[in-house]
Length: 263
Image (cartoon, rainbow, N blue to C red; front, side, top):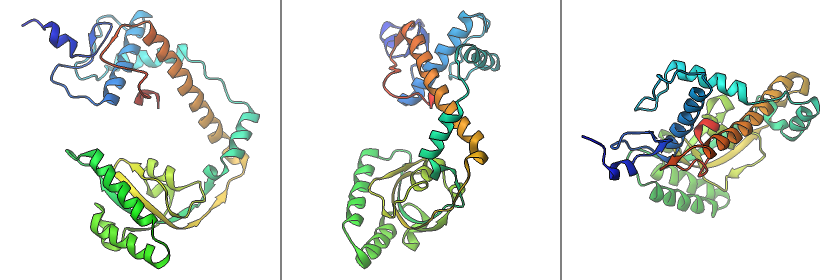
């Protein structure tokens, strides 16, 4: 049966190429990721890097040939120069805590887990209320209140121990969790909710051991890679903006937020 005009209006597309089926349910990030991949696939075809017969998959998964062609396309069009020694030294001086080894934090938390079907807005409200409650108590009352809230509310097994996770290294944590905990001097209940793949966390840093800062020469390669990655992401965003400006987009907004492809 031919697709109706109404059905077509409900399907996001790039240059009339559908990004999903009518009954697919995609998050905005998933849709933007598919759109970016399709833009690059089409440009690879336009530049004769990919056969016109290599068609997009209904589930958004690129073929091996398309993935290789896109890699060649990006290598050809994105210029990412080596960062200068001076730029590396400036970055190192401004982010020395990120190049320390042996840093540890003693942490406890209250986890509000994001599970299938959960009302995220209501969950955030509960987490923010909890954060306010534990931050409004000082001294011994604060210790007891945090432990009580963890036992009553936390979706983590550590709740039975008052939320205590103990001494952690960066390698013990999910990257997004570690990013919030390490490389700073904050002690006490953090004044913000921390987001991770597991949900929303109310976190208290009980103590810190700063670790040892590595000398510049020993981390120069890592610093250079960090700066190159930042330059690459900027160049990729600009290139995607150029491609999007020359394409007909329907049902997807590539300017609404960063695509996972460009993070």
